Length: 60
Image 1 (cartoon, rainbow, N blue to C red):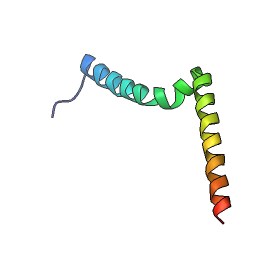
Image 2 (image 1 turned 180 degrees about the vertical axis):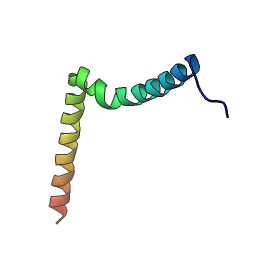
Image 3 (image 1 turned 135 degrees about the horizontal axis):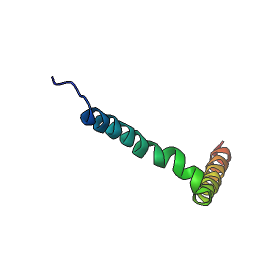
Image 4 (image 1 turned 90 degrees about the vertical axis):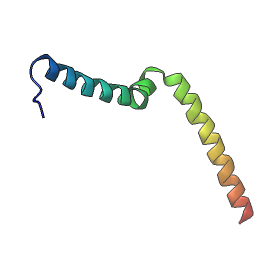
């Protein structure tokens, strides 16, 4: 196996850092930058959760 030296090493490390950045962006950075979209999704899920709890309590 050839050792990575010089520009090949820099390219390899850059690819790893780029892949981590692409994986992290939609999970961490997008909710911080676009809060309105996630606030509306959170409100919708809260309403659905309350409806579900209400129907479960009615059955008991």
